[in-house]
Length: 540
Ligand SMILES: Cc1cc2nc3c(=O)[nH]c(=O)nc-3n(C[C@H](O)[C@H](O)[C@H](O)COP(=O)(O)OP(=O)(O)OC[C@H]3O[C@@H](n4cnc5c(N)ncnc54)[C@H](O)[C@@H]3O)c2cc1C
Image (cartoon, helix red, strand yellow):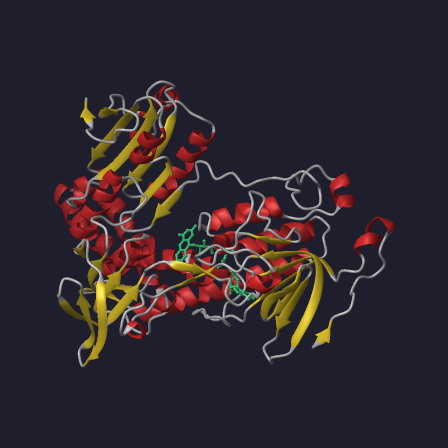
């Protein structure tokens, strides 16, 4: 094994004690968290290296790519497909809008402009609108791949622009201050670092049932050669319902199987019911409390056998059955880094493992597996060299060098499920609030027909909900299922972070006409719930 020697140039006296390390920081994994932590650290004077597996849309133990899951196999490509899928129903309804507008002879010019814009947008997302509405999956896939390649390039440039040295290969930890990189040709090179940061993310897992190899995961689902005509999805989490919406929106028949009575365990129960109703309303067949037992190959496709004895033949079976932390091949246990039962790296509130020089952030720690959370953890961790710290007060996240530890704050983190229409939430669900509350909880709800549907005729209600502490009037949680939910919830999250009360919501003047204004006009509580007694609900 080659030994990479010190690459420092001249070192000043202040750094003399550290001079025997190749780097101040070596990061393994250039996804959301790793890129953020390394970039910020380098920008603040630390000497940083990062290693990442070679690029490919479908990940494996030895394949990845700068940008990580979010950019290559997660949030970004998924959202592109959601946009694409949303045009199907939009276009159908637009025909109705045109007819209504023509019939009513209202603003013909405006209608024409709207049609043209939607049509142009839709074409770029793979839709052809001539005599009939058609969808070209390959065209959208190509656009998606182009976008991912573009982002991969941007992330690489961000690293080099910040002065981070990028190594391509598989990284593993071989000592408290030593990392080994296995390069593409199999050569192993080791580097020393004062700090090691593990940001290797997580990987989709399949259900261990006979024939599991016939199914796919979200990685492959984002790069399928052909759009499925009939898809079976197993899972009740956000990835499962998002893919159900995507494929259904593009015209496929979709069967969604999950173990609980409702999808999206962990979200507010009432909102879960709304999502389930909407999925069904859009033509997705729901199979609650059902698991898959076996997959087998038939002439017509993959045959699925459920634990209720039902058989379905589909051309794609997607396992959206959770993700597992990428910690297996990092040699961590040999070095003495503690993992939990699921393989997640155990860390304290500052993202430090039981070994003081080794740190971990993002999905590999399995705290809250979202891109913005990995970014926050990376920011809090980021290294500042002491001399830069002395010069700048801009950078306060000096957990490692500055001696002023900064812990990530997990309160009131908003998130969204990009099913169609989307669900977005922040703060506590009704169930969580009731469980945690000392006094009573007031629930405010609003269910209404979005203005757009009044013309299009779509039967799909938007629902909003606020969870309020009856004694303090503080808004503890908010949720919405309906168009633009994620865009609206980001602003609500700021209000919750500031500790806004219901009275402050009400004193805010709404934007009219909008769905968002409902959040500031829900005046009477729907029910009052006593602490610790989720049931019965007292409707007011
Ligand atoms: C289908 C899907 C949709 C998602 N949608 C959303 C969403 O809408 N919003 C949201 O907030 N989150 C979403 N997520 C979750 C989000 O992608 C992750 O939470 C986020 O990417 C975690 O960032 P990370 O830095 O921890 O890991 P990652 O981004 O996964 O980065 C880890 C990197 O480490 C590399 N790596 C692994 N092992 C090694 C090794 N030994 N050596 C070198 N490199 C290695 C990997 O190749 C990878 O590039 C989605 C995830 C999926 C799968």
